[in-house]
Length: 141
Ligand SMILES: [Fe+2]
Ligand SMILES: [Fe+2]
Image (cartoon, rainbow, N blue to C red; front, top):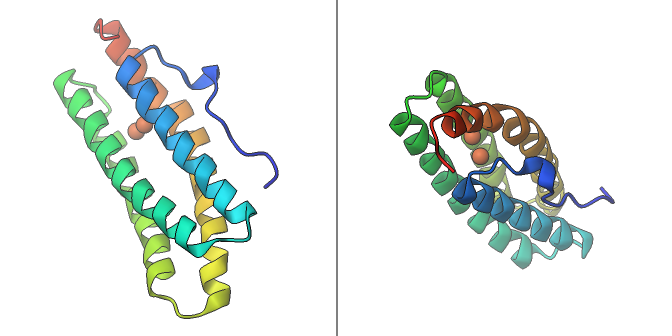
């Protein structure tokens, strides 16, 4: 993983708070990459995981609240995607927290980074974009 993913204009929807939150997610992702690149400093990785976990939960709740408020027709499917992402992330973080095996412990941050990369690209760029269109059509900015 040499290319650290950065937030770019292609992820901007024009909804200020959502764009800010997505940028924040990329920031945490960037920090995780840095921690891995610096030889998996486990303390730094653990701190990234804690913030990631909290931020993802907050972000999903915020999106679901907005989609509810603006009656987004695909809310149920989107909520399910959030639940699946949350479960997968939780499973990885639990292994990381509980394992005593150094090799497993060192491998998890990379798995989380790969998982996040896919999520940022697939979920934000496709699924989030769909609700953003709906919200923008409702006049939100
Ligand atoms: Fe999102
Ligand atoms: Fe989402």
